[in-house]
Amino acid sequence: MTEIRNPGMSSATLGQSSDSGHCAVDIDPVEYTLRKRLPRKLPKRRNDVYVNMKTDFRAQLARCQKLLDGGGHREICVHGLGLAINRAINIALQLQASSQGALQLAANTSTVELVDDLEPEDPDEAAEPMTRTRNNSAIHIKVFYPDP
Amino acid sequence: MFTGENVVSGHFLTGGAFKPHQGLEVNTSIQMENGQRFGNFPPFQDQIYNNASVPQLENNVITTTFKPTPVVVPPAALKLGKEGFKKVCRTEEHSPCPFPGLPTGVLEMRVKEGSKIRNLMGFAMARMQGEKGFCGAGEGGLRQVVFTGSGRAVTKTITCAEIMKRKVGSLHQLTKLQYKVVKEVWENTEGGTSEMTVHRTVPSISILLSKDPLDPQEAGYQPPETLGALWENKDGGTTPSTFKRPPETLPFDSLPYCKRACSGEGVS
Image 1 (tube, each protein chain N blue to C red):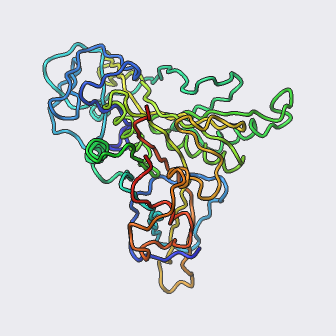
Image 2 (cartoon, each protein chain N blue to C red; image 1 turned 90 degrees about the vertical axis):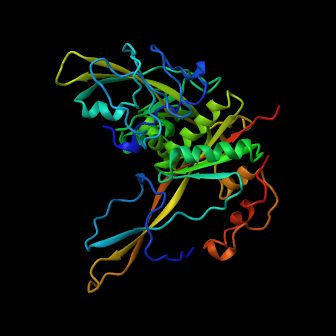
């Protein structure tokens, strides 16, 4: 699939990269500027919460809590990518603790492909922009009230 | 050491939710939140901490075995490193295996923060794929393997499980999350006499991968992956409906499961 290059962006929720064991580590002979592309924009339902490392933890926790209490959703789904996996798990466990055991958790894991754009540092260099793909882990935790 | 938000996530105390299964050993009286979401802890005997502003750090709940004094103090994990304390040892408290009815002949891979993935995978793959020389009887490999990790090793645990799923296809997965209590002993490098025992609750994950089918009704079950299966499973196979976002913002319009996944209401 061809991917559109968004100019000049920074990494949003990318955490540590995982060693997939497939690709060998290659040293760039030419200096490149590395630009991380944002992960694929995933569809977002009302009860989807994507956790990141930039927003305050308490704010994200409060948002989840509000969705469960006020929003009237029977379940919410907490997603985390890379470094935010820890935070997502923490949020889910906190929600469960504060509900006094009424909530249940179901966790699914997946792999997300991330693409880096490598642009040559020196415009005179006869190097062409390359893209490099790497994999990162993601977790999706369903927090729900079990059916009686 | 501690690096701000990357700290091993401790436990975030909320109102009155001290549950026995979390396994927190509270030796001192802990004052619960004053309308905040932080626990306040007594300081250590020979060190006084300022009641600084609540740090950005998420959750670092530490219970100590020292005698409490009335002064409140913020989570002291950051101060431990600065005040010249060195971690002597760290032991994990044993918590029961979260998988019910697991047979005993299951390989348990404990993933630590410093574990090298290629070492872990080398061992696990050899066991699962059953080299003749490895398993004495030459049965052709184990049927099940459990990856467990806590604190900073959680991401690595998930990565190991994902790699194994990719290499050994069609594995059934069961994922469980729980808190683990970790006991750390810190020693003062200068003083030499004072010693601290810190109890920290950290989130931990256990992933069971099995060649045999598992119970699909169990919470955290994930079938062997087919393309688009993850989104379909999350929705429970709901009928396709329109996007919430305009289509041109999604560069991956061609993928069928994108269209299906975004529905008005979530699955109840």
